[in-house]
Length: 177
Length: 302
Image: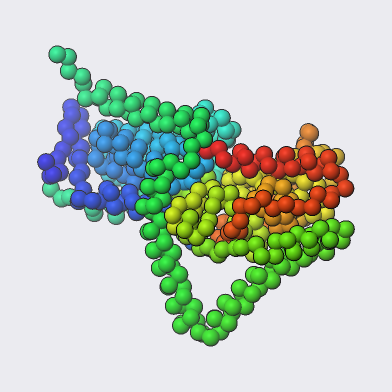
């Protein structure tokens, strides 16, 4: 059960990856601590969204929509809890639930190991998350917020670039078959 | 017995989780709950790591500063910097008072009345985990006497107010947060109006009538009307003024470096600071007071 196995369908032949014990918990905790600490010393790191990158990575790797969406929910709710009382619980939670579900669904159908594919997916998921956050603000919180701007494109590109490199390192945490 | 396909189970799970979180949001919007358990757990779990990080960074910096970079010189420099910070605060307050000669007596009275306002230094150990809010976390909490709605400042100017207090840590809502606000007034014209955040590095001064003259470069200080900040603490500088109807659109550069906070000062008092209402236009003062307290009340909302 702990061995790497393969998900087979009529057309695809895609590996489902397992990780060393504690890897998911440690990476998630590390991403959240980094997210809430690094900005104090390096304000420019504000645009990095490590919790999102962790959600995407494990969604794409494990390729199980149920665990993907649940992991996204947990990470999102913890990010809400650490974002201060002005951010309601569920704000990032909803966004990362959807991202986790979509990432694992896409991961189950496509080969997402190539760096170019990863770059494009992270870019897309970052924009999607921002769109969901704006939607929540507008529909549920009645707070006017603009949709897209140049800063969003830059932040998406930076996250995609950093994520692509980080994913290469995180690949080493996978169990070998 | 009918078997539910796996894909439908996953979609049902997705729908259930999303619905639960939407309901969670709805509950929070309806009910202004305080100190939610998940927040307490999360902050309690993470703050030790943040403290260790801050401690580690402090130690590394200390070793470098005190041993590698000329031990005595750096220490003397540090002492001078602390003294300089204290002097900057005093000078800023005195400059404001000097510019308002007719208010000198009232300000001196305030200074005497609050000369021994207890203050507490605190180290910034964390920030909000997302860009949706502008908060910082400090290493002082309930055990140190920190309470909600206490003002937080630096020697440069106002920073924000305490919004959540835990045992050994507290969260501070920065002035730049969308839900933040402070009673303020223009130093030159003494026009009072709340200043609030937009989520950007800049602040906005909200309710200055179009007929009032406001100049770019004009200084803004706290008015004290929000019952959180003592008056005459530097708040910002006007950087842009646009005509509006019925209010001007005024953008303000915060005086404190809110994106580079490492240490802050918590004013350890929740007692309402009473000021002499010797303003010539009493009606205007009352109106400004009402406006100034509005953002403070709003900031309680999630």
